[in-house]
Image (cartoon, each protein chain N blue to C red):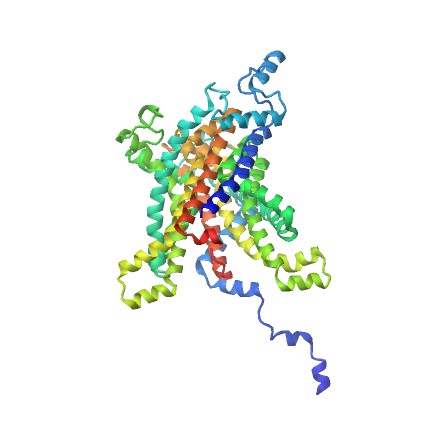
Length: 296
Length: 317
């Protein structure tokens, strides 16, 4: 009998274990219908962006002067044609690629750089903290839209310049959260204990600090994507950011402004796409927040 | 309290200096010649050197910056390359136009957002809350430049009720308080108000729900306080935070008005900024950004000080 217990496979014992944190979060998240729909919409948009070449009925770059500005519902062009006679549906589908890329990339870059700055400042402390965080304060002293536009305006139009400006704008808030969480974790008893038992700075950060920082940062980053989508398209709308003839929702909104009086439905279409994407990310974040029980 | 304000003001000074450095350096990120917009492409090298010297672009950056900052503090932001008029005059007029628009938008946003947020927070988890919350999520998610276009389509192109662009009849950019001018303000102000509306509604909802769950409310109810009495308590507790959010939002609207001003051709700082960017008018670009960013810093300072005056606990923490 004693021997039987000793040879019991470890897996059988592990069944008693309580589910992990993220499993609990997912279970709660799954019960939130609004958040699940938002997640579905986002996944669908990503799928559309990936499959763009296979599902577009026409070449998004090829126009025809004789077929300019056809209203939605035109046979062969379900959503009409734009000011150069290019198929709107195809351009909106291809637009998902650039618009999502321009909206999501700066947030991920800022998450990476911002947490690195914040964790370094919080963990090292002292004058390193002072220098890093006061610099962050200066960037934070600018209204975000103004800074993004001023930066990309100064550097000139283009995808890379647009990405850089948006990343710079999103770094300060992320660095601040990372810094404050790291500073509070650093003083905790178990981190002191880890240091006393000889753990190096890197392994303490990896094991104890990151675990505490990543959750709040991740949720905050998700909420930034909605803002970033609107801002990135806004840059292209102004003529900064993505340049013609690339299909991007903000840029399409800009070039279709000439048809505001003749084809109003047509000009509203790209904006609806930005709206749907941004509201889905906001609802997803709200769902995540309540599933993770984080206060807004 | 006074020590707190003094500390807060002193803390703002290095930030202002940093902001000025960023504004100054920003335009030097620009590739190419700062005089590209005024010099003809076939200008002689001698003329180019003369112009560089005239605008001071031939000096080292540090020297240029100190001169620029010294003059800026004295109220001189240089001369616009494009119009050859003082930047201060150009910016001053634009700021008053944008400030008016942003202030009206903030008031509309605060009233509507406060109402939606209060109703949502008071009837938490009922259908009323769901509707009010849906409106506020839509408010923070909508690309406002698109909303502006949609409003133009409906109220100008289709119904013909309101003018689509400009700040006055015949493209006038001088403001007067008469109906002919106020009509021009309605669409841009409503469009702009959507952003603070959504944010204030979400803030107020959370505040009201939090206050209602506190014990003193139950105590007041048990004591037989009327619903109006309880309402007063909620307002008193929620107001400092809500007003602070409103103040910060006004700053964001001032700095972020460029998209809406482009849609409505509103002659404010946004349109000025866009002109400065696309015509590569460096002094104008530097000046506009500096003025807008300084406004934002000072506004943040004011919000902090006012908030501390209302709720002295902040100064002690």
